Image (tube, rainbow over all chains, first blue to last red; front, side):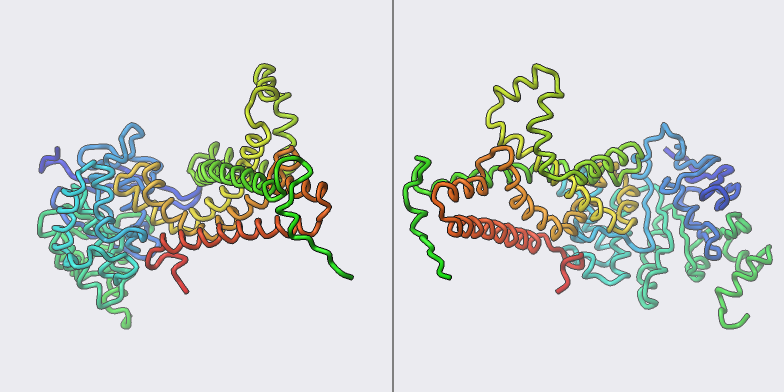
Length: 253
Length: 245
């Protein structure tokens, strides 16, 4: 089990290439402590989605080490399926299973992977649906839900495995503006409950309000790793300054 | 020109000594049904496995699936049936070959059902593969990210969706297997078309014989079509392909 001293997620000299020439992650060193909320931001193509996907090995890495809760994720001897049970993942495009009801979406993995009895899994699922405000939608199919609702179900689906860490890959980027708030509210509530979270997002309001640290990535390199206040008021690199100008006031450059 | 059609011939005693002509056709229908349905079960099983193999992230297995499809799809069904019936028993170890030729029960039926099944499996594999590839990549990732093994991912997430997508093309293959079973007359299976030829020869009522058998084939195909349409409707899920009308 994890102690407070050792990090929940640790990158050690991680490198990844797409093909031979595209060096997408360059010598990444990063630690996320238990209960910490880290926002990862950066321009498009900076490697932030790739970075977060390497943690549960949806993207393999070429060299370096990734540790999750004291287990080395990129060790071929590691049972990667077991490790993934501990790491919830929320996708930009929700990726709910369209052939299953909301309730079945949430209970499928607990029942099939963790072998939890159906009635217990359903009770847990209902509690989680209650928490994300969608208990009345348990029998609906994903296609009948709005984007914001689908993403909240996806978060509940991840939480149903009772993970140690939750990873979010641009969870609000595919949403209509008026639905972003409901998803961020659920994430904020989750952060306050003490969940370790790593969030790729451009929602700077969320970063400012909820994150413990902001990591700024550009061309596969971590350029900034700072507390939100420091990142927003006093970024150290010109690239980050430019990025913040563009993202905070896109009309005035 | 006047057509002199004697529909009553169906009820007349046949010259083969097997009862009235309609019983000839009934026997044929039984073998057609048995061959097509057995073949279909084999085709679905083998075709699903081969189709899945071709989408796996393991090169050798995918290649194996590709080879299967190329071989079975590129050789005429009739040639395949001849191969299994006449050539195969000669190439296998002598003991087995002798058993096939002498002691294997219903050799024509078994050869026809297997041959038809393997042939159709290549076509089913093609449909299953395209069904799997039509799904968004995120579906697989979402399952893997929750800790599902690859087999679980296929069984619980990918295949239930892929099969829904390919019900319409599979319907065509299911109908085809009934029609293709007529090729089995070449290895002597007394299926419907074989019996039609018998009836033509003995009764000389060419048009009536062919018309009767045509009607039976059309009814079979129609029934399959309706059955699959029912299945498609039953399996329909809101928002998935096939729901739009």
